[in-house]
Image (tube, rainbow, N blue to C red; front, side, top):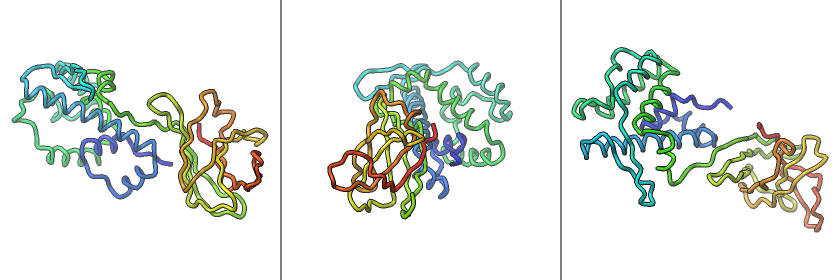
Length: 263
């Protein structure tokens, strides 16, 4: 799967409307969706710092993490932007420090997005780096931004498109997410929930000589928390089987969908 480039995700985080292709990709790709959520939280934190700076007319701003605890966000010295401008070889028109300019001289959001769209088409990869660098500098440190985030997103660490086995035509997908508490969750989706018996989700060794049952799958989507000591490199194959109601916990040998995780 071709993921969205960071420059596209940056512009979407800044407020640009997604194209139909970008919207469809974000709906189908947990990784890019999670990355966009991270970009948006960074932008939100930086804007919060900027608003507080304008209200207080000071070089530092206070922000809370939703629990009442205050974190200090400090505006960077203008030399920070000078270094960013020099390292990224930006246009001369971008030389003024965007964080030290008076509020009245700041361009409107619409004009800023229009300019960003034009730069996106002609300048490519440096755009994401520039935007990310400015946002991080405005917020102080990544640690402070993490503290501001009271609802972090899961991070996709592996995925696979599931293919139907003989006599089946279903399609599906499996994604392993790392949750904010460090646990891993397998999210499995399929185009159908039809089965002669019931559907069971397994992780198999590549040669299928050993396997781990994760549980039954109700409907077309299932969520399964993985055992903490489970080594995915030993059990990388996701399998959905059709199990009869015979009381036998072993795999029926009748698999509907299967695919090996990209680790």
